[in-house]
Length: 336
Ligand code: FA5
Image (cartoon, rainbow, N blue to C red):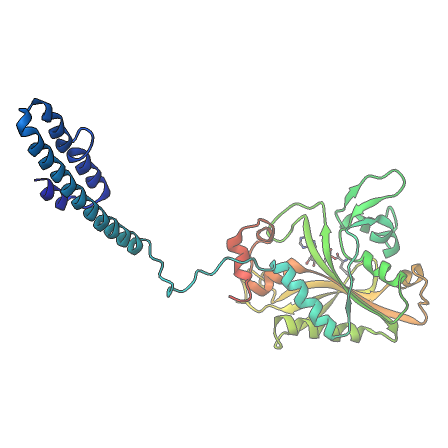
């Protein structure tokens, strides 16, 4: 019976139970030994030997069976836990450059090929650079156009820059013509948020100053830029606009590339999308930095980077850029 039970025990748990039942301290075979004392003395040696023989046989069978079960269990585990090394690997998630960073790189790269150096400037700015030196004196109503965030200071008026134009002044102060720079950077405005307005956004400023720079240089450079970003077939439009730091001032638009006429959401049915403000550098700025306005002329422009990304990829709401939703950001993975 013990041998039969043993053959039927096929895992370590059943084996342990079998051992307890037959060979353990309270097991059946062990209890036979205890009956020895109740037997007549002449029967004891033969009975004792028989019990010992039985014990040895069963112990041997148990050892062999235990080894079998151990192997079977091991094989089973190896199969269950096997790793198929021929399966393709799981690609780890890697981050991507933010779409605004990508656009800044794309734009500054285009301008680098047109001879413009990329420079950066402070986000916390002196009001002198943000306004006064840009021909926007105190009490001038144009100062209200930029909904500026002020940082209080006893002696100086300090602001979070509402545009990158202060870098026109800083760049000219630190160099002599010819000057050709583009300036990407963060800007801040005390602004009501909507689908096209953030309180924190990016601009790229451009500035070229030299002898004999004319409006046609501005037009040529901006048209080339627009075609490289949005396609060679783009038409461009210049219209009069006013900024205190340029004269004349223009707004620059491209023809709407998704236009379905009336009801077009991108250009609101006008057929044109404004992408930046620009103009010829106002002589007062040249005077402020010690350049001779009878010798030098220049052009400047400023564009909103988020708006460029929105146009290029059809992003409907500017707020998506700064909500940190990976599902949105991952769409700008260039490798994908
Ligand atoms: C300016 O800031 C001028 N400094 C641009 C300029 C530079 C004109 C040099 C002439 C010469 P404006 O306020 O229009 O202009 O802003 C320029 C661009 O910044 C806008 O066309 C828009 O694309 C972007 N922009 C402005 N405010 C916001 C905002 N709240 N959120 C997102 N983008 C904005």
